[in-house]
Image 1 (cartoon, one colour):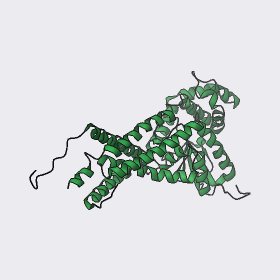
Image 2 (cartoon, one colour):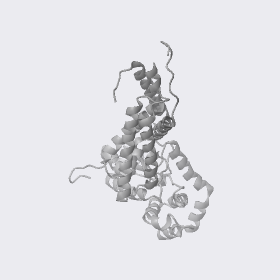
Image 3 (cartoon, one colour):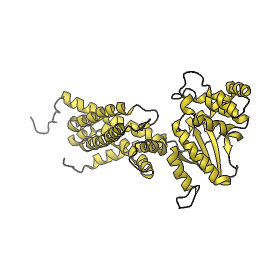
Image 4 (cartoon, one colour):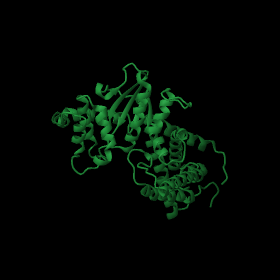
Length: 159
Length: 213
């Protein structure tokens, strides 16, 4: 190789493609969920949080005002592929937390009619949302492990 | 995982976050207060009351039934301090008879018994809310309250009555109401009985003091 010749990036592996897809899936779902919640009044999401019966009313409203911003920001950074390792790890932790919330409500047989996962517009059963969340968790894992290619991280690293 | 400082990357992240923030703020519903007046029979309390509550409710919804007891109590405790305006928001995708029930309640209101009929609808909601055919309870409650059922039925079938209910629903949609019961308490939103009580405390309609309201 001659001096100053640009280094050619190795071809994408199928795992890296999966990581890219995982990054878009986990980032997309978080950004979408965050947008839906932020577009609606926080009190509606707070009402959904209250039905899980784990936090007092005042804290439910605080969580309803802050969590959607985390979701939106993590989602946006994941889609862009910025700080992928950290954001995918944080997204995984957030999704795991949601999974635990859903699981405890499911096990306690709480009458949660709207899980609040995507704002207050409609809602699936707790069981369905639990299974769906497993997929997003797996996507976040793929993003963490293999999602650094085709990202802005890669662009800034090359420069 | 080593973090290296990279100013261009930080700026790119800042740009992405600013873009996301701007988009979210643009989408946000900020004007919550209803604009259409309700018919007098759907209001309780004086027009000049310092605290005004708009209640978006569905007679077939269990949480609305629960919260309606709070409204009843707040009205009895606060009298001239409070005005409650009832707005229909039947969740027709979940409750097949709630639109009809709202129409019947309005027609009972025209005969002077909106709140009484509404109370019976709430109390008996388990019996009629998911009925496969038109519930007999609509007539039963009318007879109980000694209403003119023939007039009530013809009023409930009148497209104008349904239009009034649908206008409430459209207003709720425009104000970003997605669930019931939703209350607008002096332009602040509260969803469900618990948030209604918090809003009532904020407006001094109830106190936590021993021996207080």
